[in-house]
Amino acid sequence: MSHKFPLLPVQASTVAPEVDALYWTWVAISAVSALLIAVAVFYFFIRYQRRKSGQIGHQDHGSTTLEIVWSVIPLVIVLIMFVWGTKVFFDQSRPPSNAVEYFATGKQWMWKFQHPTGKREINELHVPVGRPIKLTMISEDVIHSLFVPAFRVKADVLPGRYTTLWFQATKVGEYHLFCAEYCGTEHSLMGGTVYVMEPDDYEAWLAKAPGSGDQLATGEQLFQRFACNTCHFDGPRARGPNLEGVFGSTVKLADGSTLTADEDYVRESILTPKAKVVAGFEPLMPTFQGQVTEDQLLQLIQYVKSLGDKGAKSTPAGQTTEGAQPAAVTGGAAAPTTGG
Ligand code: CUA
Image 1 (cartoon, rainbow, N blue to C red):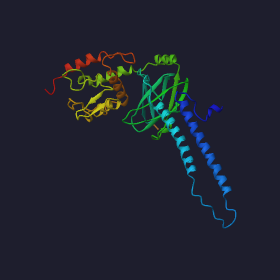
Image 2: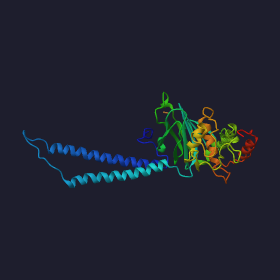
Image 3: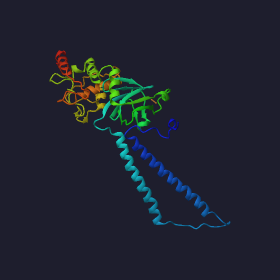
Image 4: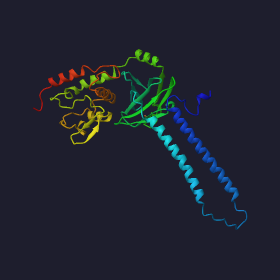
């Protein structure tokens, strides 16, 4: 059962062969260099040993040719490896634009995953084979790190900041996932399994195990439950900026600076609204720190993202966000007149 104790885990993602090729090339270069050095040490040891007592060694003050040769050859090798390594790094860290977004939350000591459909899992992640999948990840407590050896991907999962990891599985099967950052007593138990399935099997699995509602629908419900819609709508009476088209756009702040609205910005605006106030608005928004979980923040972000394209209301999940707008308008109109 040699496959029970393989030298390297199976290659089960598109980047795995790239990573391994780079790895083995480095191993080969290191091995050849080590061998050359060892041979040279032995050769010089024998060739230049003192043969009679009182023998004085001959001083050699160098050779320019030799200096150039042993500087240029390693330089070329290292530069090739640098360019190659950079290519693999970018392939590994930049998700393709058609990647489907999943979410991961790390906490002591478990992994929670959310599918685009809203389906949730703990310590297990089911994904279809052959599709690029992007994980947006955050921690509820300390630093964790998500590691799937068979996919050759690993990324730290931090409290207070979103990180991403992507992969495209190439082989149906079950693969271990680990926490690769020491995070407390049960760090070694903080693992699980990635199940890579045929797309049809995956759809069947999703249908058989329905989640707690669509991720977007849940985000929209939260948007109303936390009464976000009573301030964030389009109109002169709005006390907060209209969120349509905000995600991914450039936002002008009260202090004159600008930023691009991304996941971290939306999260910060919910938890610490006064940190970055949008130009033209009063810092009226209360903090939702302690009232909203990391999972809910991800759902809210997903919802805000879905408002990204003003024109097209249909979302990747095939859901419509209709209902949010009338609700927002009603909420705004129904709101008591405050602040004159
Ligand atoms: Cu989480 Cu180690």
